[in-house]
Amino acid sequence: MTDRWVDIAARSELPDDDVVAVRAEGVEIALYDVGGEVFATDNICTHGNARLCDGFLEEGEIECPLHQGRFDVRTGKALCAPLTQDVRTFPAKVDGERIWVLFRDA
Image (cartoon, rainbow, N blue to C red; front, top):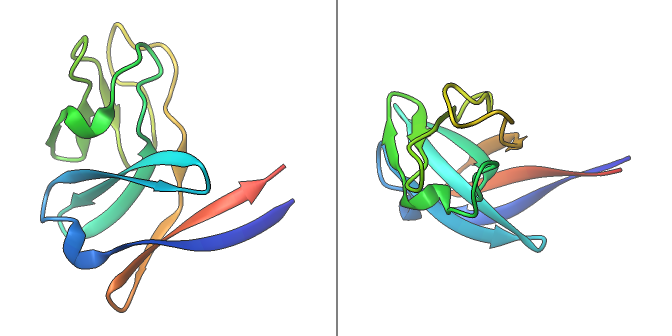
């Protein structure tokens, strides 16, 4: 397994308490600012083909815009129906003015 940190965005591109989509390593990722901390998940809901970046972010939970299911962006845990599968998370860090996400190859 190979771990690699990938520089995916400027910190200034992610507004406070908001979500944006970026693409890196062929994967569309949702980046979240939750109280100044940065988190990253797959951008596609596990229930329907909806982009999580189009959802509503509140207190560390993203609401899918399609069926209003919610995920905890810190853990990826599916929190309510109709969601039954967690969303994949990626370790994220801020180094200077850049956001980095950890990708793992199997």
